[in-house]
Image 1 (tube, rainbow, N blue to C red):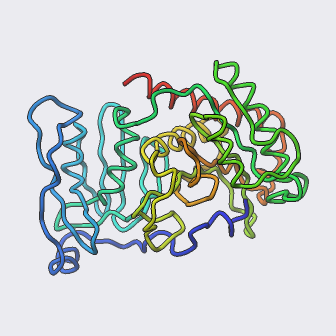
Image 2 (cartoon, rainbow, N blue to C red; image 1 turned 90 degrees about the horizontal axis):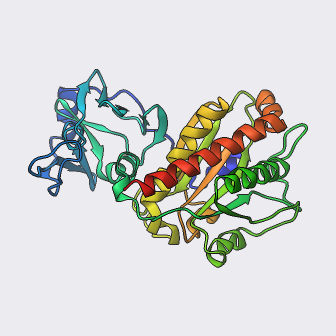
Length: 348
């Protein structure tokens, strides 16, 4: 998938850096901040009475105090200069003020809104807490009961070769990895189907439609990237952009609801497990968990994620993606992510 198509909701990327603590933040928000209380929630990390998470509202967006979020999860809150870390025995989350990106247990995650300063405190947009942190850290919020049937979608095919490398095409790489993935998932006891099993064209609409007709529990769409700058490399995973949030490459919030938004929480966890497993299993550069309104995602009737396995315009990455050994590693990593997501569902 070329970069121009990957940026489905084209627009601004990360907000400019340079947020400062203290007086600067007070001056910026003094006229518009409204100190309130988030609805009561029982702390997952500790027993005891429910408490309320403080929040502020600016620009129509509700921002929660990260210090209170740390308490909610039973984590330690550590504030640095323009950054915040939440730590526990099991997890580490790091945030940078004015940057639409964080790390969750070492995985890059792109946010809808950049964390901001409120006095000496950092605040996080409520949708990012509810739709990213919660499903990543708490399996109990997920809706899917179990994974039995996996639909694998090798991107492109037929007259549409997708991204072009010097020696391989996106169409051929996605099909080869998909075929290996069928073996890996079948070995783990899953029923697996492909949207295509040879070099033929398949419409985007029919790919999502097959997930419905085949009664898939999850859908994983496989792609490769390409860009004009040959030094760009790495893997990234996309979920469908939730309603009233920004796509990773979008500056405006998506104000409509799509079919797949019914699975927002599961989409986030599935994409997180995929990104984490692919980076660990293949050594690919971590380009992060992102969001976009790709047709194959937004029309999916089940939890879904789109995997960009790497860049065919990066010489080394093209060699890797064309290598049977690397394709096997990729398939194994994706299968492991599916198993981890499935385990999260069963462990509730």
